[in-house]
Length: 446
Image 1 (tube, rainbow, N blue to C red):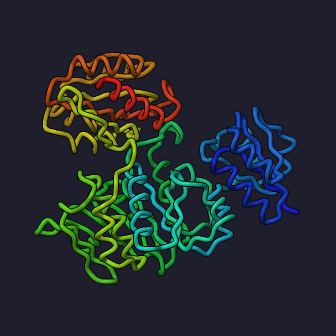
Image 2 (cartoon, one colour; image 1 turned 90 degrees about the vertical axis):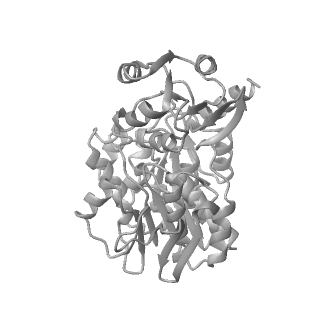
Image 3 (cartoon, one colour; image 1 turned 135 degrees about the vertical axis):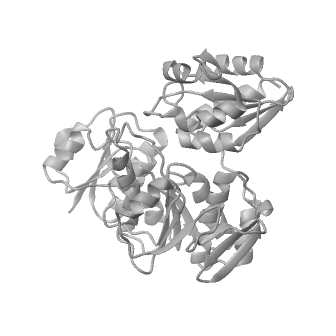
């Protein structure tokens, strides 16, 4: 009997353990921290052995194969021991892909992947497709493969998940953009991060499709280095010779696909902003390639509701708009948020756990649109030093103090934008926790 060990007892790990158990494997799950009660109950219900609060090497290093949580870096000592012993280490997605023939729409990118994943899923579900939602959003792909039977899966993939995928194959692969992010995971080498993202192209055939942002300079350079058999469907704001999606002279979204052209007035798209235009292009192309009826695509693109924590309007208090963009955990994501803001009067909340950020990308927009920055974090030294010569910067170390500073600075007609550029783990449990607490604090102002 094959012995499979799972490292990590969250959604991904528990799903992998249950799938392996249904396939007749001897399964053991180990988590260095505490496993949530509902996951412990799921493991117990399946008769799966588990431990928490630390790893027991003797119960792990005897595995035939290991499924690793994406949050565990490859440099972790236990992972290094597994590699040294020649024990294969894979991802939950890799495991799940072995046991389903469903079509896979796989979406990655530094920014916009959650919105694009949810929008693509929305289109398919609205069209009556039996689709599953998995990866970084939705439920574990492995658990769905074990318990359900979907025809198509729409999967958001992080670079961490892609690291341990080898034979898994997408039918439609999407790269929205690549900008510096998680460089602390990649030895502060941008190329290592790029290589991880481009693993999404592994195993694509001539029957498969690759959708990507044509104007992204990083993607352009990498495309000169890699080859793929897949059909190429680039998108851009303006048309080039081979562009598959763009805005035409009549300000319409235009998709040029094998099933024929698709057009839709840009004004009818549910999501506004340049970044969301690209997200709509990628989702629309994916749907066309899956032969979804054009009227279903058009309707779904017009009635989709935005993603929580991504440019989410919270409230207007004393004439000041408050916007929750807590999901902006890198600089480029903040750039897109600022690009969609009014021409002036923005009070920008930055801060958190810095991931090697280069703030120069947003400086032009800060100069033109931002009246003040409120730094919110345990250590705001980098933000204060970088921006204080160009704009007023307030140094705060709690959400309550940050909100108070914003209320003091902002006047009627201004916008307070939480778009932190940083991970949340210094003051908050997650970006979701940060966003929800921000929304609660704003509503308490009313």
